[in-house]
Length: 239
Image 1 (cartoon, rainbow, N blue to C red):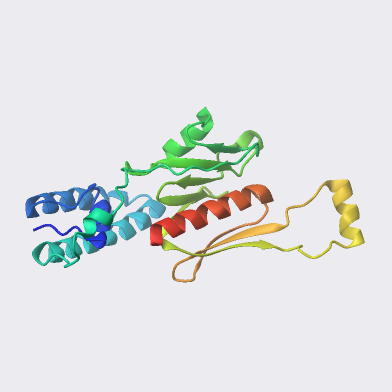
Image 2 (image 1 turned 180 degrees about the vertical axis):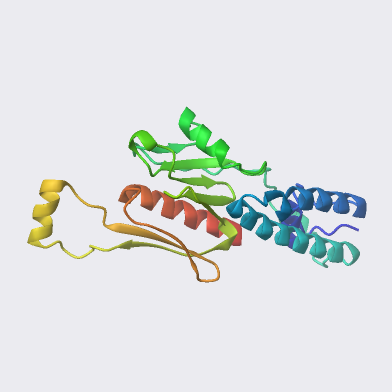
């Protein structure tokens, strides 16, 4: 008999199904489809995508094992399913950048942003939420931050696309390096050249290793928007 505990509901979503499987055949079928879709060998020529696939493949296998075990021995949690709020497939959170230049929220993406998202080869469960262009000028769309409903993507100046799941986010710090009162020389410099960016957004993985630091771009107000969004998605994914 299928188990409907919170853990199994989450594992079922990892296999790409909205509800817990009602039979072993349905469970095996969902596992085979997910494993085939995310087998690392399919991404042999794409290093960043292969790393993501390896991580996803491990999650799929772990979810399958847990579901098989609970299918034989359902968790004894009285009518827990009644207290689980149904979640629509692929929910699309909202993000608001205001009038910040080079920043776009779904579904209002210009053509060049749509092309950049298409080139990122998102899987069919991923929905783009927000896009921050880090390039500017004639090279727009070559460097960016892409926020999806499951993962964050960052493409750097070398064309390398780095990906992190929100469930794998560790500490996220927004650090103001000039929080103290500015000195006379800095005030003069800012008056002449304009106010410099003072904040850096530090993003770590769950194991404590550094994922990325955003310093010069985007500007500070956009970093704050991304910071708040990541904290929200981390809380939702790890709760």
